[in-house]
Image 1 (tube, rainbow, N blue to C red):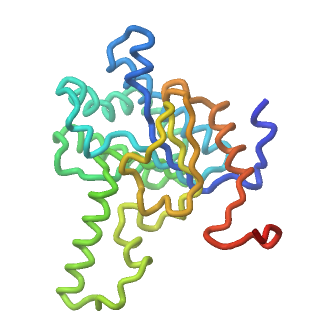
Image 2 (cartoon, rainbow, N blue to C red):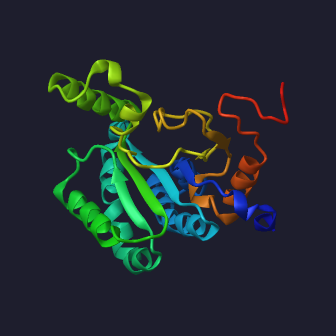
Length: 246
């Protein structure tokens, strides 16, 4: 079993994932793309539960990007209904799993019913003490960094901050992920080798793992493989490992 090879004392604290391949998963089965999105959506709770069981503290998932609005109208409409479908179907599990659900990204373009269900999920789980499950919905890293820069600029104009005092910590404290631990591992499914405007600041020293497995098929075994790969890495954060001086 893959799980037996995992060092439970070296589990990454913060994992992020780019959930890719829903459409291709459906196409392989001669199903509409929405079928792939449906199966992908329900996989979120499964993978989140397994991460929690392993001891991962933060799981951040890229579910809908600022660029995804350019997809076909019927597909976007389907994706907008995803939070409602997941919550109605998995409400009991979401509550019992002790995960704190957080949604980050723009919220000014969602229909009111989507905002209502997002707020309800966050409110119901706000006092949970388990894994922090962050859903990046209408999220783009360029938008996140631009928003942070605007906030910092306003603080400078208002006299609350001197430009010379702008540090990486100041920038991090104005990102959507304020207060989150450093990102340890970024996983992308479906065989694509790009970051796609996701957590560009946060991945500075994260380990990257790419797999050909499509997101709806990504399961415990695949997560084990990713974590085992992570645990084999020599993480130096720009410095040198004392035992490896080259």
